Length: 172
Image 1: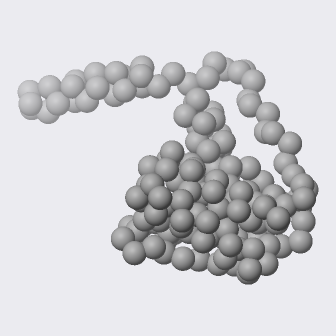
Image 2: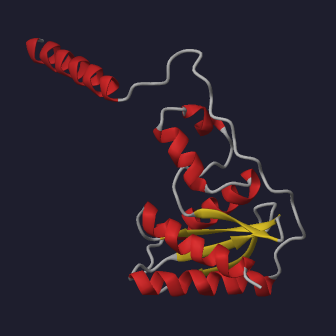
């Protein structure tokens, strides 16, 4: 009986300490305004998607991190996918989820990561949100034509790889 009371007290203390480390935004705090989203354009072609994926994989090889790479159209539906040798199996679904979220919400998934990290947890209620860097919209001539999502490295590495892919797709 005493042991269970002691364990309950320890758990209560630890849960209080854990909640003290994450301070939620003050009640009534202003929610961050989303950046202006680019208008939708014609869906990315398979040739453009392949070009983006190849550039992303080249960057992944350059930094030594095998990735899974997904390219989607503005609806979030898959157009092109590749998994590099050595990329973790978990990266397959993560890359697709990051690409879909970046396309549907027309913003990099790092934006979700940043606001969630700042304590704005309401983004976790959005369907299909990926709160991890590595998903980037593909914008050509000022219009969103799709998005690229990568997974296999840490957040910074995934952001570098996806950024390289998006830049290649937008290049003339």
